[in-house]
Length: 469
Image (cartoon, rainbow, N blue to C red):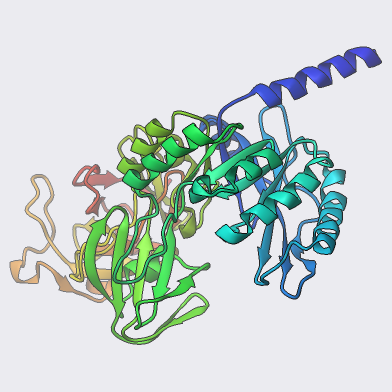
């Protein structure tokens, strides 16, 4: 019986080692995947998660823990392999002295060995001058690891120390994004197809060990000072704060996933303060560029990062799974327990929408229409805002009680409104938005209602809203 268990375990480990598929980095997360995420990860063909386990920094010549998890939140299973990742950060000129390397190795081994993982990964954005020193450290660590891998900057393939780096690990994960620094006057997209294709060819020609291509799947919000230099990327933000921010003047149409805004007045955004005259740049992955690079890479890929519900994620797991052949968005509206619930039940994300500074240029509008002033309660809830209108369309079969064409788009208080407009900035696949309390006048509880979603090209113009169950 014991021999059979050993054989089964060996067979499982060999299967994990031989299995291909897509990988994703999981960053700054200390909770396991939900049951829904596990199902969607499997549907997306994701077989490996590279989990951000710890950070170690060197600020005075000694490597010390900046943060770390007690254990890997998500266990490895036959369907999903989990690899711990340790990120190194340093600001000193010589972080890899012999003594520093020995202490760093000891800390990493003590932290990772108890996890029982079949691979350890290091993540370090080394400046070119330190790549050789980094390779020396990796060589010393490799003997203690079951399998040692490292992320890499794509441009390292051109360095004289690249062969030394290849000899120090079992596998490399070059990241083909953020290839060049940028400024507010020379913005660069997350993924630059022409430059990436050249670098992919260089890696194919010069890397003699296994490697996987790292590609972007995230959204980024960057703040630039009035001098045009980056003030850094914002970590905590939401699309509503960008799309509907009145202080932000739209400057440039989206190009390669880039949207540019200029702040006309100071305001707070997340934990940052944006000053007048500063530039805010939102970046998302360009689907066409991503599809082109995936085809050009012709190998296993790892994406930064695993999609989740936050704006910085860049899209949903469902959208990630359908990135090569996106379908139409499928939005539904229902009345449930005194609330409206707008849901994206399809596999395609409804992306953030910004086309200018006009009243119809930002976000999406859910309109709920009645045949008269029947609304009594209407809270925004998870929507950005809600507003009442007297707004009538000449729609066959729809006969409002009042036909005053001069009131066609006149804002109105709730008691006089015949139409409610709920604004929202985006809706990823599998997500929903719940309104605040939604009630009709008692005498109009069974009044017919209809709805539509403006600026969503794939949604039908008007649909009847079923009465509350």
